[in-house]
Length: 431
Image 1 (cartoon, one colour):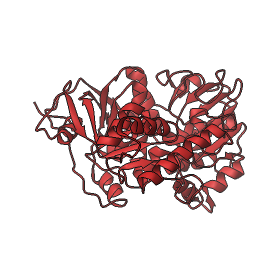
Image 2 (image 1 turned 135 degrees about the vertical axis):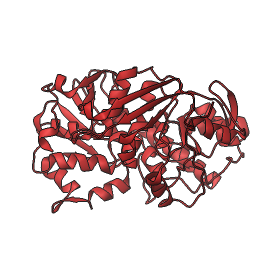
Image 3 (image 1 turned 120 degrees about the vertical axis):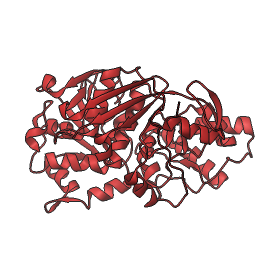
Image 4 (image 1 turned 90 degrees about the vertical axis):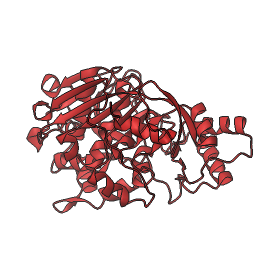
């Protein structure tokens, strides 16, 4: 029996010829990422266990990216950033993307690949559950808690159980009104929010091959919403081109063997799937758009690591061009790089940013913003009984602020079309 890509990456990181699902192994990690929510806790445990003067395992590959609660007057949020700044200075960490300076980037899961910190075949840990995003470039990437992160910070190692793998084969050509977000919501709805608990979710097939790297990130990003330990797509020429444009660090490519073992294999014809939303208040409450068209909304939110990349804003701009929004619509670029692209890329003679402003959207600064609620002055945070269509990745009660708000997860196409009508809307007529 051969090995799948996750097993091969983990065997390589453990210095073993082979591993199988269920094995417990020590692996060498390549990158540890942390941010302003979990960084201070991780640093506190690191100093407590390794000593106040201890050095991180690799100052180049401990990457610190504040992103969650940046643009706020909240003193506790500011103190978290101060702790990160002090630590980065103590450790002489070059890859600290500091708020208030020209190094600031924004959302960690978009920054990490954009700045060349993600390479195929690597083990990437992050103190955030959506670290699984980086499987889009053929890496094993997963979220860990503060204690595990602190241990990895000091040793460059972690103890992992090799997960079973569920394979998703996406065949066919995407309808024009479909996006990667629709597909991952459809798959989560198929297996349930706990259907891949501690499993790797491997994605393959013609539809995946046709996707941009950013759309692949959207797919892998939401593996955790089905309980997945990781999401992964084998690196191809498109992925290698993306990586080589951003780093010259060498890497190793891995592919699943044809006789690899899988817990289950799901095969879908994407041409037969329609735009899909997740109804309040769980990502697996799958609804085809045709069943929820006309649901009244009070706001639309387009942003986050899942829906705030330039491809997401291209989709939103296509729909909103020449239209006005009828509900509060929030546009939040994931990073400063994406924000610059929005001011450069055009449809006709108008930049994406000009289209959004002319449509009546409210533009926020690059960050996680309201995706994780945040302090009361967070841009886009819900208060009261708002009903939101959002390109973010979670719709649990209180996720965007108010416990009373309801959140429908959707693609940028659906979120933009719905912003125009004030109701959940099929985007096809706007394309």
